[in-house]
Length: 304
Image (cartoon, rainbow, N blue to C red; front, side):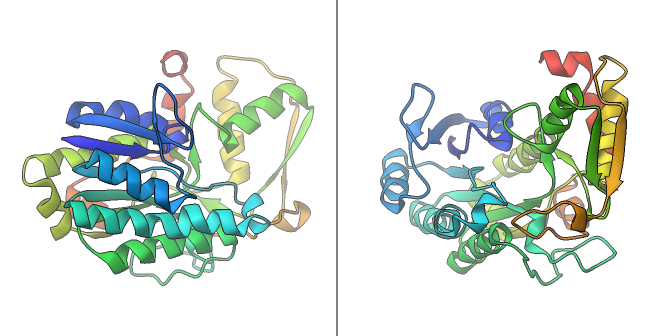
């Protein structure tokens, strides 16, 4: 099976390069031509159509996105092009080619006003440009139809690129005190967990006709680690785990309210996702965020 993968320099795309390899020939794409990737800039519709028509994949895994949440408030055109318009073009080309699509979305499509985990039946109401553009991308794929799975995840972290975990570890080496928001709650999700769950879905699909399997189950699925925690609680857990193996300068971790930490984009106060539909449909049960954090921060995982 020929698989076209976007976003290979991102957290999820990085992991997908490994987890998708047993399923077929993985052809990676990026904004610029390199030895590792074909050129396909999601902000340029012509390059999307040209690349997909040349490669003719059986499966397109779109792990690329404009994920700079605060920057998107000032760069909404680019965010819309990548997050909102490109997924619809990918879906159109995929349907024409008879290819299936896996696309990733976000918990930020919700407004955070619930106090229980969001299901796929809950109505989205994004509060920032990033969430709005990601929702438009979801809707564009749904409007085209065909064979697709939209996987919403949350609070993605890894050992690659820029993310909360790496920021906390860096600042712990630089500062005596660190203030972290304690009134935003979600489910931190290791990018490797997302990639492995994706591979499990696709492994089931390859046992049958891939296109028909995913077409029959097309829709939105929530895919995140289980459990919930605030950003402060997540930072505390990171530091407690890291302290087992390393020392750092930080002496005080202080919990603050969102109002004390100004950002360009408004974040949902509560964005925990309910994974029951994923479990019922594909039999995939995801682990607790604390367990995956412990695995990531072991010396063995770091070395890999």
